[in-house]
Amino acid sequence: MAVANLIVYTDALDFALRLYMRRRHTVAPGGVPEGNRNGNLSVNLAAILPPDGRRAVPALPFAIIASVFNLEDRLEEFMEAFGPYRHRVWLISDGSTDNTVLRLRQAGWRCFDDGVNRRKPGALRRLLEHLPAHIETVMVIDPDIRIRGLNDGSTIDMDEFISDFQQSGAAAACPRIMIEPDGFLARFQAFEYALAFRVGRESLADFSITSGVSFYRRSALARALSEHSLSVYAEDFENALILLSHGERIYYDGRLVVSTEGPGTLQHWFSQRVGWYHGLVKVYVERFSEVLRIGLRSPFAAYHYLVYIGGLSLAIHLIKIVSAVLLLLSFLGGMGLSRARRDRALHLRAESGASLYGAHRPAVPVLRGHAYRADDGGLR
Image (cartoon, rainbow, N blue to C red; front, side, top):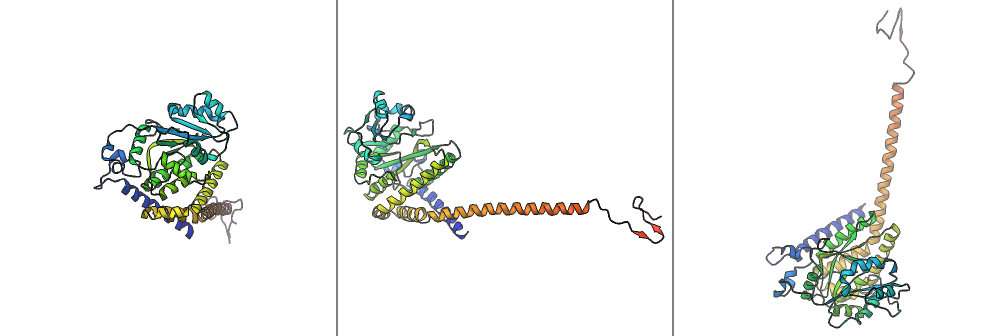
């Protein structure tokens, strides 16, 4: 119980610290919030943009890029979701063996294919080589995500998001990812994502972490992928560590919302967690020198990347799992003990009732010379 209490108090203190840092990073000079423009942001955007950037500036050309593999079964859903952006979409087949490439090309989509399975980081690095030179901003997506419009969760449109990002000079920006609430596991993960983005990423200022859906300055993404291990495990976290260690900035902008499906089964959910933890450990150990350089840039960056990720998320993660199991067993044991006590009390009550209202009546006392009659209550 002492370990469990320590974990609870530690997480509570971390939560309070992040709420404080989130407000501190998004408050304008003078202590007054900037209003809706800074809502759901990890930085004070007005302070980052150039003086003339507060007016609407048309977004420069950008591309939406993705690596696809055997997408034929869900191709109709993908084309329907990204139909409005088709003129900006550039795809690369990561060694697909079905008719994905053929059907995409027949439908008029740009899709490169050289028959090699490079895995996502390697495929994206190859795709960047095919993009026109005038495209300086790219949005990396997964094929199963959906971009939410102004009346469907987002508070700004894509062009405004891109314009702000291009003027900020940051290397990358991460939008908010929302899980479609379909089933108990998906609702549970949706709540987890809401905390991770609305509290976690908003507290990191411009030391945030990219996700599977992120916006990059093209040159920054090319640099990150050139130093990347090309592993699919926590590849976005590795991108972020590489860029931040080189002095780049990454911020979170939750005004644009994208959605994806949650785990449909417990097995999928468990395998997803195992993959996340394995990737986090792998990248953290292999890139620990970059983590140290990031920690030197800011006290809160040192706290997040060294104390929180290295300590609370990795070092005592197994202890958290064991503590959770012990708490669950204790709870179940308490329920069993309460039920046993309730059954015992009912049994004793039944025995007491039988002794008071049983069939055997007490013996009628007989006094010398008189008989006691219980029916009329008197002596005769």
